[in-house]
Image (tube, rainbow, N blue to C red; front, side):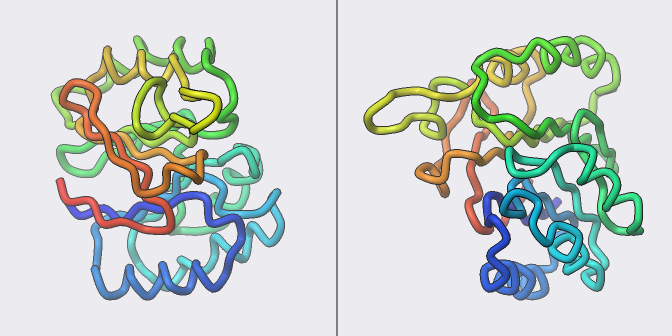
Length: 197
């Protein structure tokens, strides 16, 4: 499985064109956006529709610059974009689970309620978690003057579910950073990264 992941481009069309070119060159099996594709939803539909001619499934969650409703409504008008917020998407032996929006709360009770329900759906599949916020106490949530700003709820999900990969974004300062929680590879792909699993 070859994944192309990106996050936090905030409507930068020059950057998006570069991403589309890289996708064409790399031919991944799946594309993932971990949120904030837009700048406060400006031009959101056009940004998503740029992936129309790629012919690769495009999984997207909202960041703190979009709402889950906006993303879902636009994706429903396509045959290529999948709104992954609070839902799962299965490809062969892999199950992708996404949770977007926010990025500022350390504890999210709604997200934590999903964990036992999702655990029942795994059926020996390999889990790839996609969130906008990073998990707490990693190389992906530490800011120089304020310390760790990540989500304890996301860390709890990782410690219970044991995904093989966790893709996240939100804190631009940590774009490109990689870490591990137990055997889970955690990464912030920034404006584009190939992940082979």
